Amino acid sequence: MRTFWKVAVTFAVLGLFVLVVAFGIAALMSGFEVPAIGGGDVAVIPVHGTITLGGCPGSLFYAESCAQVEEIKKQLKDADGDPAVKAIVLDIYSGGGNVVASRELMRAVRGTEKPVVAWIGEVGASGAYYVASGADRIVADEDSITGSIGVIMFIQHYYELFDEIGINVTVIKAGESKDIGSPYRPMTADERAEMQGIIDKVYRSFISDVAENRNLSFDYVETVSEGNIYLGSDAKKIGLVDELGGLEDAVDLAAELGGIKGEPGVKEPERKISWYDLLQ
Image (cartoon, rainbow, N blue to C red; front, side):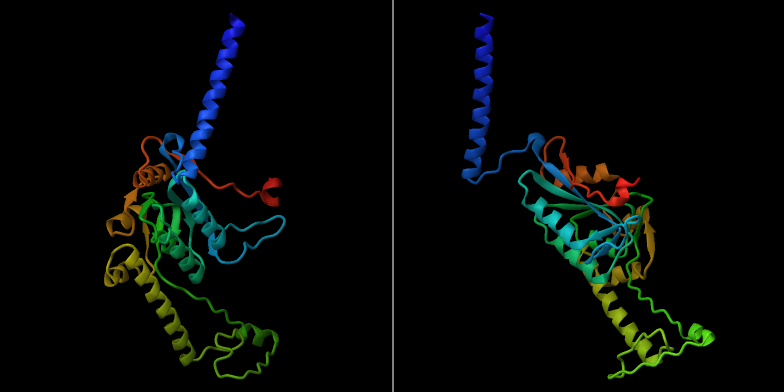
């Protein structure tokens, strides 16, 4: 009799397994998504370090933290195409990055079909806030550093040092402005005005995008920008973030926007292990 029940239970388990597989195949063939256990997942994608279109500089013993745009875009695309993922959270810890890289990532975030919530923990400023503004909602820790809507350019000059140590640099050029910003000579007033014009144009584009993303007027964003940094609590008061809270709060909000019932699953990308990690 005991043997009979063992066989019966075995066949029952096998039968259940066959039904589950058959249901999954039928759902896929009919174009319907198989419901995820728990109602769905929230994909958490990190945006940590300097935002760049290129690779991260480093060596065998040192690796700079950077947010590579193409890698993050791929993670966004994968999450957007994953039937189990219902919403996305950007875990932002960055002081910004290059203008073009930040704008490229912001556009990718804004173009994502599924709801996106940006969470600013320690810092999400300048280009990182640019990226966050493309999300559907922004959640920030009350003591996070955010804002810093502005553009900056550094030009280093060595000519006085070279004069001191007796180094002479001869520049041969075709085109009056070809060596604009050269470290080997002072910048002229016209050159400075030209560079300022470029920076002002990029700055206005930055403000325009943030105003559109946050549903604010250009003039208002201009008054609260000027490179100012804000704590998360102050950023909420002026409309730069929507809610105050931690990463779990951002995940809960994303789950709500994604229509997830009950406790959402959390899906994170696999972290790449560097030589530096192995030597710790």
